[in-house]
Length: 426
Image: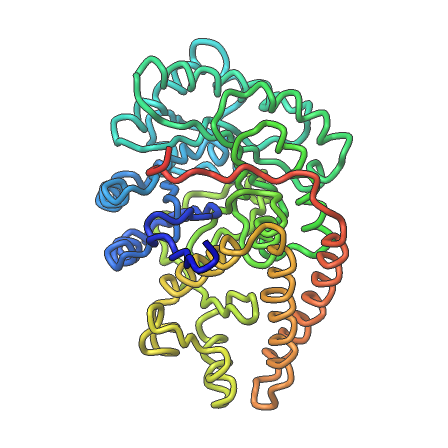
């Protein structure tokens, strides 16, 4: 038997290891995503659709569903429960009203009626998953927490009665100051343990792609307390090196964010009374993702960097022919596609590493690489002064981030998050 050569299995038979990646679809993202799906891109697990945009994104919803992706309804109840985030667009939803929701609106028969409207909306439009009707929670004693537990139970019962397969997601929106406080976090866990859901998405206020190293370490430690639930944990509104760290260390099984936006979560404006609805406005231009710098730059700033010298263009312009065939031109003219394509490849790179070496692969191949490239870019003499100053600040931040995550890598992870399943494998 020593002369027997074992041939590799056929590609389609090999075990495919993946980490979850979900895209939050913005108001004008449907055309871009339709083109991306048509190109065969399969790096994402699913798309999160805001309820007020469901009609606008009807074609995208149908196409993504036909291609086997999850289409997940966000009923926007978190925004609808605050004075600053409530808007005329949200008021027009079946579960909307003349003013932002109070706790009493989701209690008793009236509350069950609102939950029924949300589930019916999702079923009629053939969404494949539903983010449950939850709200921004300020502490373990917040009345919204207990109210949301009941609402999630109603949602589960209504879905079961409708006899549809629609996994239910519990979105826990909470300040990082509460999550990283072990005493407060431990007080949350019994309530969360009773919630009927198929996944937990953590939407943590004041955390995301701009998080420091110590905050990222604290976030990952907190995530592990939710592993005991035995269901997938997803970092919502988290991108950049912090999001990739949470995946690499096994703190979460997936991440979700928008196309070059919504990669962090700040809700201070939600709590302030909203000024008059200003109506329609032109959204800001999408930022350009510079993977080597872990940075989302304004288009003009990115152009300044890439055109500052042939050396800068050669090192930082996208040279992936599948992503940007025309290099810098495509990177600047179609930044949304570039950002999603590159993030999907980063997540695939992590997923392709055995768990035993994934953390070290992340530290060497991503964190150290970014640290070195930021230092290199900051030294370019041809850069405008303001950009050089920004890169100098970024260099200090990345260095501190690297120190923090390297230190925690020396301690074995006590548990690993459950990874979400693709719709095709459920």
